[in-house]
Amino acid sequence: MECENFQKTLKEFTKGKVPKRINAYPQIVSFSLCVMEKMEGWLGNYHYDKLVLHDDDLPALKSQLEEGKGAVLLCSHLGNIELLRSLSSFGENGVSRNISVTTIMEVKSTEVFNRTLKEINSEVALNVIDPSDIGPDTIERLQNEIESGGLVVIAGDRTSARSRSRFIRESFLGKEADFPYGVFLIAFLLKAPVYYCFGLRTKYATTNPYYNMFVEKSVVELECGRSEREKRIKDLCHEFVEKLEKYTVKYPEQWYNFYNFWLLNEDCKS
Figure 1 (cartoon, rainbow, N blue to C red):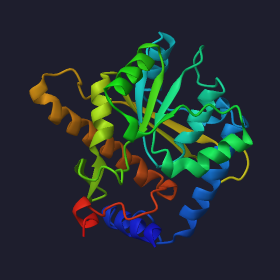
Figure 2: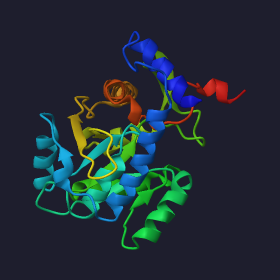
Figure 3: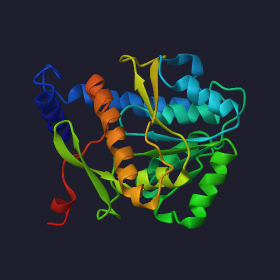
Figure 4: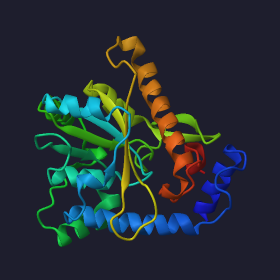
């Protein structure tokens, strides 16, 4: 089972500290709660005061948004970033104005979930762009969104089945894994401040869960000459992987990539 494969990899990486015992059950329970909490968020039943904030770069992001300037949020399938996205759709974002949020994700893989959201709340405005539809005109549209003070949200921890030839290989939890080149290329092309964002449940609870909101600003300089472009894109990916690794060790039961994360692209061809 892939939960156990992940936990064994994590246990080896942490020299036996995390998890204490190989057991898929906590991950499965956590994911079930996550799905329920996503629904609650899109129904408008979750509120900003349930977020636990930290001494990180959230004030910098909020200040930027208050000034009418947008940003790129790089997230993952660790935790529940969907909950934070739903909060923003209801105007609960911690700043004094509504923020437009555009999400880049594979529409086909989330088709059933998105349809369910529409059924439970017909007013939901998902504002989703499929990666396969992205071209020069889309990049221009996203740049306009950011210049208008909006957010562009994109997950950096899944390579697309349609673009296996474009990836960046990084060490994650002690083993090589492939990350989507296109995600970091988009972040680079938008030339906007990049923030890594994680929404992680503080504890198991079936009612009124609190979520940690972690926000860290990238230190990678995106303004550079053409000769430096590939290095900066890889630097951005490397930085993202470091953040993902840090929070995965702290919140392993909220790892929701239920497949062999370390299956390299060469293996996919065989």
